[in-house]
Length: 193
Image (cartoon, rainbow, N blue to C red; front, side, top):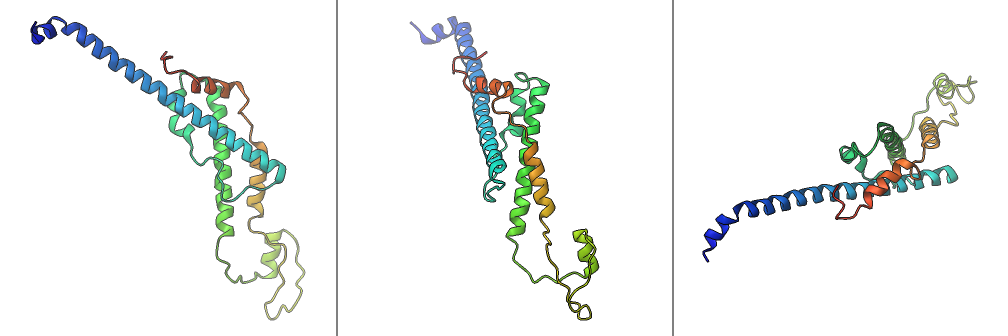
């Protein structure tokens, strides 16, 4: 039997098999990517919530840690638009926005603490009182320009912002929204649709 005649006789079937295989592999790759992204997002949410819980208990973040070392949600949100409702997406967006903001504040505190210490020129009594919000009674040698300056914390407001934001983060790991992501992450390889 001639192979070229056999190929031409079954060209339609061969095209159908090759096309079907290509479509199957495309769908499988898309599902695998969505499943992997969902697993990574679940891990990020769990880790960030754990760090925030630790802060709420001990009132301290480790400056070398980040709540969201990677932000898989922002990179892969388009994969979940059909699976999640608008409110679900908003809830996850809010969590990631607050956790990301906490990361920014922690980075600013770390940068400030790692700045080389420079000799500070003490502000005058009137500037010190404006910064501290207290009336100042000059003490010491005012003529020489030496004014004692106490209780000045330039990162005090930043610490307050960190505290407020950390206390307002809504935990979502044990919610129905994240349960939907968990189901997506646990899909088997043969569950294409």
